[in-house]
Amino acid sequence: MGLFDTPPDRRQIQLSIGIVCLVGVTLPLIWPLRAVPLPALNAFAPTIDAIMFLGEAITATLLYAQASVFRSRALVVLGTGYAVTALLVVAHGLTFPGAFAPEGLLGAGTSTAAWLAYGRRWVFPLVVILYVWLKREEAVAVPGTERPAIRVGVWVLAAVAIAAAITLLTTAGKDILPAYFFNRSDVIYSHAVWYQAALLTGFATAGIMLFRARESVLDMWLLVAVACWVIETLTVMMLSARFTAGWYVFFIVSVFSHLIVMLALIAESNRLYARLALATIGRNRERNARLMSLDAVAAAISHEIGQPLTAIRLQAGMGRSRLEVTPPDVPSAIGAFDAVLEAEHRTSDVIKSIRAMFGQRRGGRTQFNLNDLVRETALVMDRDLTAHKVSLDLSLDETLPPILADPVQIQRVLVNLITNGIESLDSVKNRRRKITVSSRAAEGTAVLLEVSDNGAGIAPDALDQIFEVYFTTKPTGVGLGLSLCRIIIEACGGRLWASRGRVYGATFHLQLPRSDAFAQ
Image (tube, rainbow, N blue to C red; front, top):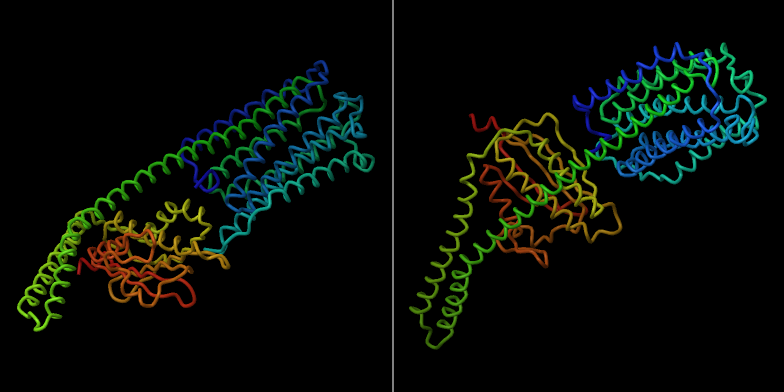
C-alpha cells in the first residue's frame, strides 16, 4: 500500500485544513493591496516560474513512478497534467513581457503570457475530472484482471505535444485570441472577470467530483490543491493590473500553495515507504524465525527418526538373509521382523508427538474472517510474487462465515502453499504465470479454501505421497512442508488434500470448520 491507496488519518486531515485556511487568509489581505503600485521587477516572473516548474516537475515524476508501479491510468493522466503545466510555466516565463524582451520571446504579444497562465490553470480541473472518472473505472474493474503496463514515455511525449500546441496557439495565434491586457500592466478587467468566473466553475466541478470520490491520501491533497486554486482564482479576480503589491503577494502565495502540496506528497510518500520498509524488515525477521523453527523441527525429526529407520533397514536385511539360507532360519527371521515392527512403532510415536505439539496450541484459536487473512497473506507475499513475475488472483466469497482456528498457523499454511505454487511456476515460460486463491462455503459446517496454480503440476503417482514425511519432488526439499501443513489443518479439525489441475498445475484444498460448528 502507498500514498495512492491509503485512507488519510486525522492528523493529515487537520494539516490539510490548516493549509487551506492559511492560504485563504490572503484573500482579505490582497484586497487593500490590489491597487498599490510597486516598481516592475523584470526578473520576478521568471524566478517564480522556475520555482513552480521545479515543484510541478517533481510532482509529475512522483506520479509517473507510482503509475508504472500500480499500472494506473488515473495516476498517469494526473502525472501528465502536472507535466503539461510544468512545460507551460516555462513558456510563460519566456513570453512574459519585459522578462527577456520588451514583448516577450517566441513571438509573444501583449496578452500571450496571460493566456498561457489561463490555459495552464484550466489543465488542473480537466485533469482532476479525468482522474476521478478513470479511478472509478479502475475500482469497478473485474477482480483479478491484470492491468496493461503503463508506457510513461508515450505519456511524456503527449504532455510535450499538448504544451507545444497551447504555446503555439498563444504565440503564433495571438491575433485570433481576445485581448486580455491593454498594455504590459493594465488588465481588461471585465474580460478577466468573465474568464476567471468560467475557470472557477471548472474548479468547483472538479472539487465536487473529487470530494464525492475521495478515498486516499492523494485524493485529500488534491482537494487541498483544488481549494488553493479556487482561492487563487478569486484573488486574480481582484487584480486589475500587474506590478501592484497585491499582484506580488498573489504570486508569492501561489508558489507557497504549490510547494506545500508538493512537499506534502513527498513527505507522505517517504513516511509510507518508511513504514513499508519497517514492515518488510519485520516480515523478514518473522520469516527467518519460522525457517529457524522449521530447521529445528527438521533436525529433531532427523535425530529421533534416524535411529529407528536405521534399525528398520538393518533388521529387514537381516530377516531377508535368514530366509534366503538353506534351510531358512525362520525363528531368526521372525525376530528380525519383530524388531522392524518395534522400530516402526517408535517412528509413529515421533510423528504423533509432533502432531501433539501442534494440538497443544488450541488455546491460540480465535474467530476470524478467512478472506481477511487471505488478503493479508497476499500483501505478505507480494514481493515474492513480483520477483517471480507471478500474478495472484483472489476469488473470495464475501458471505463466507467466520472460522475458529489459530490465524498464525493458518497463515503459515497459506504462505507454504503459495510459495510452492511460485516454485512450480518457475519453469513456465510460454503462458501467464498465475496463482488463484478462492473461498466458498462447503457442505455442512465447513468452509473451503482452494489454492491453484498453472505450473508444472503433480505427477499422478506422487499425488498420494506428497503429504508424507520426507517425500519431496524438489531437488533441495526436505519433505516436511506439506506434511506439517496437513498436521496444522487436521489439528484445527479440518482437512487438506490436493488434486491435479484440468490442464496445468495443481490445486490444494483446505476444508476448515466454521466457528458455529464448535457451538453445536
